[in-house]
Length: 161
Image (tube, rainbow, N blue to C red):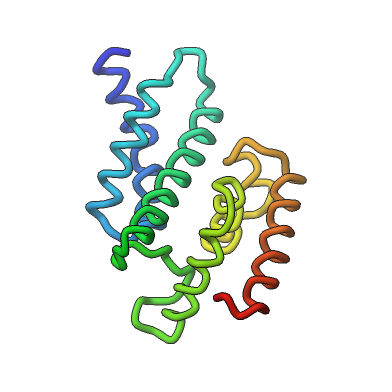
């Protein structure tokens, strides 16, 4: 891929990737770095036959998974600055302990289930919209979400959160 094509891709998809990363990471510098990482992957896997809608779905999935991995790795290494962004609560509010519990619960699931839960509960996406973005069926979104909710309730009922 030539430099002009790469620049065109970045102009087209860069803002969406950055917003997604910023939404999850809540840190501008980390979101910029994550956006670059996602675009490195895009450039490595790009083919001229790729449809724009397929690219957007792939980018959304890669950006979500990349950010969730950053959050998971930071938590494993004891870095408290990287925590899952709450849907509508500011840091330092009463929702802070709830956010930490939500992070612990979320970390117990695979990447697809995490992406489904974040898409629905953090981003407020509809099942159909999320299915298209992740490249899975709406039924799979519903099943993953049902399993997530059921397992999360059991986990919290046991007092592990």
